[in-house]
Image (cartoon, rainbow, N blue to C red; front, top):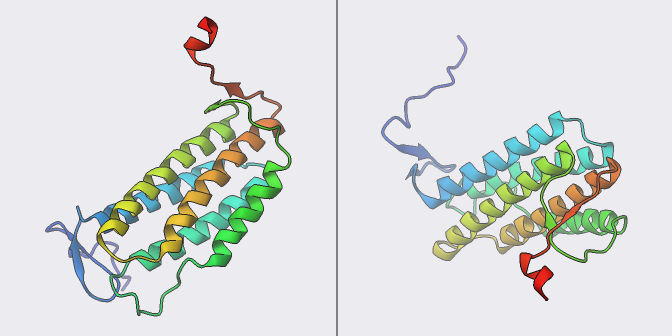
Length: 186
């Protein structure tokens, strides 16, 4: 007999963590896991638009890393043998950022999110990543966490920003630069 997808164990408003403990579904750890899941799901949406191969490859790597981050956050027991975000995960993001940023014109103003379908969705993914970073930061203020997690999410949002800019260049769509309405008065 196949195992059912529903367990009914969360029907009273709490959920299981790896290692056997339980937490209320409103717990900041559970919220953080939920935002990371939303972020990962949104990257899946971007991938469904079949972005250029270089972007696709980077997004799939991030998705894999997000499973590592989620595994790490799924337990309050730091000594459990589970995957963890490490320095090499961050350095990979930095390599991607540097290689793509080298292909972009220098920034002279803020960029208004949008452009191609892929770029617009990458900007949306970036904002979800920032939300994950904010909830993770709140969790880190309350509990001891791997400090590399915060660095990873910070770099990840930077990477998504350069990927969005790159997607617009590949689609031959000019970026919309933000100009303050006060600029006309100076």
